[in-house]
Image (cartoon, rainbow, N blue to C red):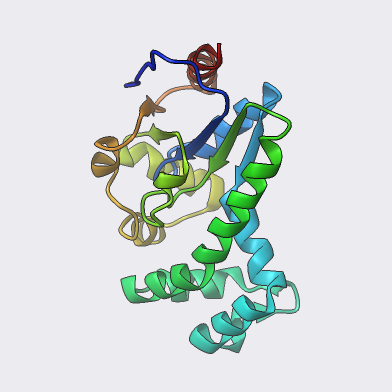
Amino acid sequence: MGFIILSTAMKKIKVAITGNIGSGKTSFCKLLEDMGLKVIYADDIAKDLMLNDMKIKSEIIKNFGNNAYDNQGLNKNYLANKVFSSSENTIKMNSIVHPAVIKKVQKLMEEYLKKTDIIFHEAALIYEAYMDKYFDFIVLISADVKIRMERKQVQSGFSEEMFMQRELNQIPEEEKKKHADFIFTNNGSLIQLKNKSELLMKILTGMLS
């Protein structure tokens, strides 16, 4: 774990929680929510926009075909196979969705910070989407690749190929470590992760003092 300490108090703090696939960043955020803290989830915003923003929906159909949607809404398996089949497709999808997600996240952070002093945003692609500039601190949840793959196999039924397709479309974890303000390793239990979430909050609340 690495972190920095500021010598001057801050009035409001915006924190991004990130990590590569299977790192446990969402579990970390759920622990923050259990402490009564507010977390904005990028995936939830992206899914809402993909379903309800007609401009985005039109662009997705134009680039990935009518099968991108079905009677249930997003055809997730179809889109995943299309998007992660090549880096070009991943970049194209990100170019369609990310600008609107960033705009929505900024708006939500401004609204929530009127009522609270610390806001968290969970997203896998903080660095990939160049979102790090919008936050005071970046928290990286890290875990060994073997453990991350096993988690996705158990949680989501991922094959090794599915895992690696997504992993290879993210910036390597070791590169992200060079830029993160806080790094928490999550190779162990949920209790250990909970202790780390509590440590983070002690540090952040100390900065507000």
